[in-house]
Image (tube, rainbow, N blue to C red; front, side, top):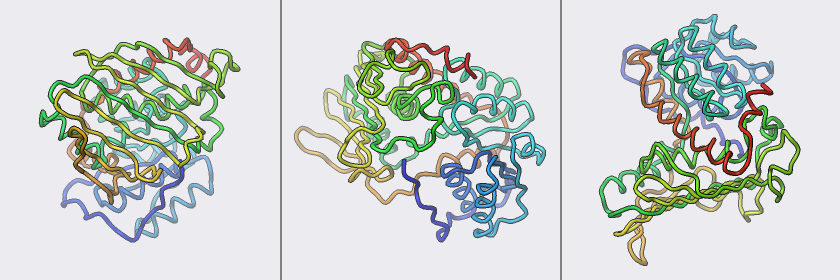
Amino acid sequence: MPEHPDDTSQCIPTAPLGHRPRLGFLGTGWIGRDRMLAIARSGVAEIVAVADPSAPARAAAREALAGLGVRDVHCAATLPELLASEPDGVIIATPSGMHAQETLTALAAGASVFCQKPLGRDLAEVRAAIATARQHDRLLAVDMSYRRTSAVEAVRAHLASGALGRIYAAELTFHNAYGPDKPWFYRRSEGGGGCLMDLGCHLVDLLCWLLPARTAEVVTARCLHRGRPLAEAPEDAVEDYATAQLSLPGGIQARLACSWHLPAGQDAVIGLAIYGTEGGVALHNIAGSFYDFEAVALEGTGRRQLAAPPDDWGGRQAIAFARQLAGGHAFDPEVERLAGVAAILDAIYAHAGISRSLARAAA
């Protein structure tokens, strides 16, 4: 995904006076830096430390923060060094294969955690992280950021109104014509999977978030690597095209499709549509954008706009975590929903004939 430009010239209004949690940021690549600057602009938390194995990345993070008037930030190379600053919370934006163990380490040290997706490479890792957060009574959340777009919020509100009648079908798509630019994404032992883990996790999360559903039966699933079944690819390869048909409680049928490097004719194709006996609701990205979305109500052969850009949504989930942390560290059972997402992803891989033991065994 192309980097979203940082806009440090506009600030979100600061939080009301009160407790400002102390935060440390682990991983300062573009998404880690984006979330860091969003929180800095919001004023909801105090940024006390940043950690990254790359000295230039650390220096760039410190410089970006200084541009917002945030100084005296401790710079570290590792998570243990970051934890020495005793932050209330740690924001994790490192390679996927490191998320679960880093989450366990931070929680055990007494810090709450906000982690980039996926929380773990399989259900076992996700369950371990959730169990540890519950054991230490610490807030744990994951950056399922599309939930916070105005378009998704409009879709959810329209569904809650009952306007669709009995819901019976859903279609969700995420094609990234670029594909990731980091080598670890393309190794199953490090990323846990390919486009299904990277993009499909958002689709499954939105499916469960909007309908909502905790379980799903996989009817069909395919994972391809360069146009051929992933099972025929080298052992550590990942899928770059995946499809699945799911059956949800209540008889709802859902179709998912995601890919990297698809010749889509534009940067990205992102969308969802949900259909019921009385109408439908949909969202789609505009002109291939990764960031601009329109939501519409579907009424027969017509449509009515529910939400449209501009919508500066990238850091909303991170800011929400900081605001929640300001009220206390306590474990929030809402994170348990992500175990259901991980279970569905595992089931899709299994139905496609892909072993889920490789990532954990090779770690």
